[in-house]
Image (cartoon, rainbow, N blue to C red; front, side, top):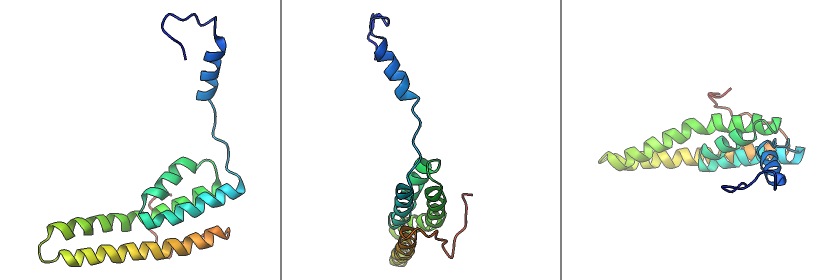
Length: 139
């Protein structure tokens, strides 16, 4: 970090360290870390599509198993998450039928939770998991 008016030749190590930190590459995941983040991507389905999306974006280039499984989890959780959000909004704004949409949102969440736990258990054993109903929007 340089200060206004500072002579760079007096403290060259400051500028070298700053440059080295900016150009550092992320290390590949170990086999255990690869399995762990794949597991977390599926567990995140309980919370919707955001955890799988974050894991996919951050770790897709660092571990093949994580990339494959987070993409699978994201493809599975994205449509139900959108449906649940729409159902929740409709539950609030549609008079008379709001409870039906609220129940639908709960059913969607239970569906996501059950399949996410099943997938997480399989992935934690090191087995790839394929959801039976998956649109595969992200390839």
